[in-house]
View 1: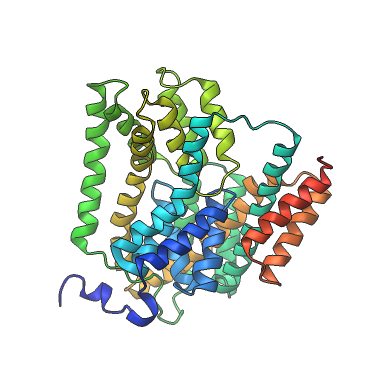
View 2: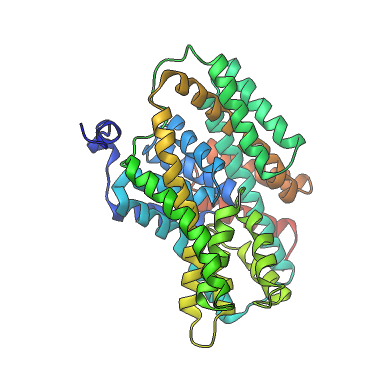
Length: 409
């Protein structure tokens, strides 16, 4: 049997394989409608890829989420990339990343050229409505995943422990600790579970995973060193964004201080311009890492905005994709061993706790300020859960309700 045999042989071609065009269409729709940051994106993914499209089972999806939470990089983009890889091979992986990333990247590039200013009560109300969309989407995702991944007392307890840990202690590394607790708890408490695959099969060989890890490490060392030989050049730009993308845990908001410290003190960009772009990034769907497209464009020499924007964007995302591929092979190996499956069941339960904690802080804390907000978010949740209203309609509803409640004219 070839090296890829154990991984790819279990794929049901009729059910699991698709086309890159199909993947791109679904990812593009998500890229145009997924507001609310990485945790909210995972809620949109769960609704689309698990419950609507059925490209993954709930435990397979949770396994991918757990993997991408434990490695650096943009978790939602990594999950989407791996789902595209599962569905349509390497072309599907590229299509998934491109479709989800392109809308917000184009918007951020356009904002860099037009230098807009987001001010006024109407804009504030719209941004607040988008935050309430995130509350509704993540709440539905937590509810759905809890029913599937925490069906018994031990796994429900592991989810609660993970949530409590994250609510008491802040910091991105605490997420990894919560998942490790889930793994240990699952190994001890979930040994009697029926054998079932906890992760999707992937066409990733040991050579591919090892090559991705080597390339990840080589670029992490070589790019920043090369950039020192040509300060404020395109090569230095690539090194800054690659290093930021390679070392950040916890999603797009965490990478912002790293980028600011690397760019503002060294005179690449002013603090005001940096923060203006960050404000714009809150108002658009898709991954917050596309803030890099804005930064590359505003820092570019005259006539080179598109090239610099593209380089910043690609090198911001590249390390996360490489390290996800490297970790995937190990994750797939674990899924074929009974003891490891019990640990993975515990990790999947902990993922529910991680998302539940994020639902409260930062999503609920930053979005809900009064009883009207509670009513709007609850209505959005019910529309999603009970009436299966599309997410785009929820976006329109929450924005409209917020504008009315704020009495914006």
